[in-house]
Image 1 (cartoon, helix red, strand yellow):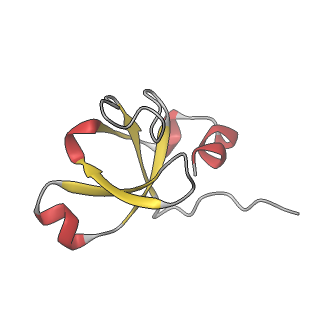
Image 2: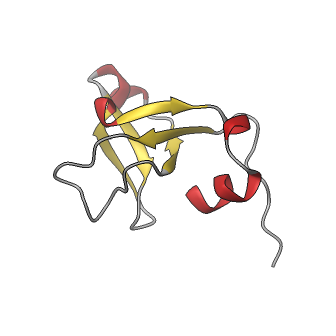
Length: 79
């Protein structure tokens, strides 16, 4: 099975705080963002977490990351 690289338009965030979600999010790990305009309006971001599902989390728990800042294999593992 061939794994495709992330699309140029995909966004990733790095977790900087997992308080209350220590089994769902790992600090310093990059996570793929699913666009969710309604969540963004109230300060939430939809993340594909450690369960493999996407959930809304407070935006303050994440920091931006540029795909060029990580090795390609690392970005694939993060999604």
